[in-house]
Amino acid sequence: MLVLVAGCATTQPTQAPSAGPGRVQPAAEPVPPEYRAAIGASERVGLDVYRRDHAASRTTDVLLQLPGAPSLQEGAGWLTQDVGNGVYRVVYLLGRKEDLRAWAEADYHVSSDSIVDPHLISPPRPLSPDETPLARAVQTAMSAEWLRCAERYNVVTRPAGGEDASIHVYLLPARMEGNSFPQSGFHDFAVSADGSAIVDHYSQTKACLRSTASPPSGGKLHALMATHLTSPVPTAFHVFMSLDYGMPVYAVTVDNGLLWSIDQGHIRSQGKVSRP
Image 1 (cartoon, rainbow, N blue to C red):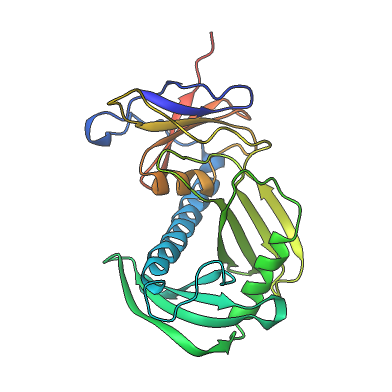
Image 2: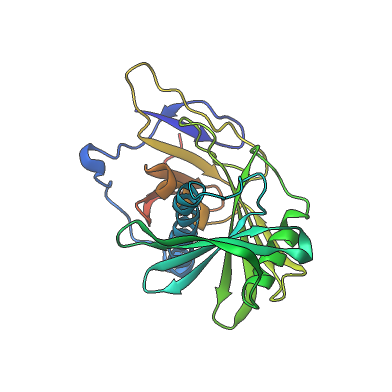
C-alpha cells in the first residue's frame, strides 16, 4: 500500500502499517501517562479546527452563488465562531485593516452537514466587539514571518478557552488539487486577547516537504506517514489532516521513538519503533 512519506531527509513513497478493510485500526498500545493530556488536547483542538475550516468551505460554496455576492478575490477572508449546539457561524469580510465590514454570514450545522440561513448583509455592517479582535489577530499573524509551503492558505481563528484569553490563529495550506496532501507549512499563532500582538508561534515542520502523491494506475492512496520532529506527540494538525484528507496518518515522533496512528479524530499509540 503506497503512502506519502514526509520526513526530515526523504519524501519517497514506502509501505505503511495497513489500515485493513473498512479501515480497521491496528492494535494500540497504552498511551504513556505523561502524554495523555497532550493527546486529549490534540484530538479536541484538531476536531474543532477541522469543523471550523469545513464550515467555511461549505458556506463559501453556498454564499458565492447568491446574486450580488462579491468574489473571493474581492473579500477579506472570514471568521468562524462556535455558537453552541453543534452550530458554527461563518461571517465574511470586506475592506482593509481597521475598516473591515461583514458582507455575508451563514450557519453550518455539524449534525446534518447543512447550511442554514445564508444571506448577504446590505449594506455591509461594522464588525461586532467579538469579531473585531479575531479579525485583528488574523492580520497580526499574517504579517509575521512564517514558513509558507503553499500558494494559498486557509485561516481558522479559535479562542484558547478557559483562563487563557488569547486567540489562536491556525494557518492551513490549502489543497489545490485532488492528489495534494500538504503535511508541512502548518502554523499555530497565539495572539493577545485584543488581537494586536503575537504571544507564541508553533510551526508544525521546519521545512517544506512534497505534498502530492500519485499512486500507480488503478491504485489508491490509503494512508500518509510522517516523521515528526517538533513535539513528542501528534498535534492538532495531524488530527486535522486525517479528517480533512479522509485517511489515516501515521507519525513517528523522533523525540521519543514512538509510532502513532491518527484516524477519524483519534490518536493511538502503536508502541516503540523497531530499529535494525
